[in-house]
Image 1 (cartoon, rainbow, N blue to C red):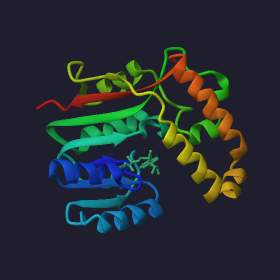
Image 2: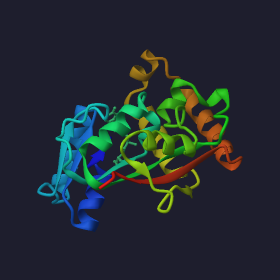
Image 3: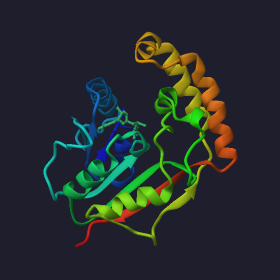
Image 4: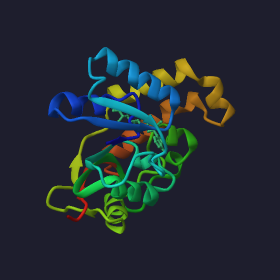
Length: 212
Ligand SMILES: C[S@@+](CC[C@H](N)C(=O)[O-])C[C@H]1O[C@@H](n2cnc3c(N)ncnc32)[C@H](O)[C@@H]1O
């Protein structure tokens, strides 16, 4: 299962590279339509299905999945404990969790990086690595210190630029309506890059397992 599947790149990658079937769950209906179209184009529709659903209430049965992944979305969830609990619910005993996400140093981010625009850029509610691990440990999946966390990954310049282009092209009026200053996103990205260079922002992989 891939939660917060977006346009489905991660789900398709797993299906193609590991010969598994994947259920993707995504909050946005438009995102799900796009994910389905891209997956059909890639010839993977028999192996990857997408469902509209909230990570806090995953519309799939309990105890059936071998593995659950979440790529770059934990940091955006308002109730991280609820979404971790849902991971535990849908996994079979012994099932594994893999999460990659933005991390912040202990003590959090500078105030300028906690705005709504920074939220759009996926960093405002990122947490220290130890806090993500503690959230997993509080659910019935135990964080596995031998297989993670791994630190690393500098901010991806190309991804940042593409996201910024997309924001400018697709929805500036709607973003303005909800209070996001699109023009300011470039300066947030510059601040974020500095935070990466200063070691305040990072990226990590966490692996966890539901007890057998
Ligand atoms: C960075 S994208 C994930 C990209 C995806 N892993 C891929 O490979 O294409 C994050 C996604 O999380 C979705 N999302 C945010 N909150 C969510 C929630 N509560 N439940 C499900 N999906 C959510 C967003 O709509 C967005 O598509």
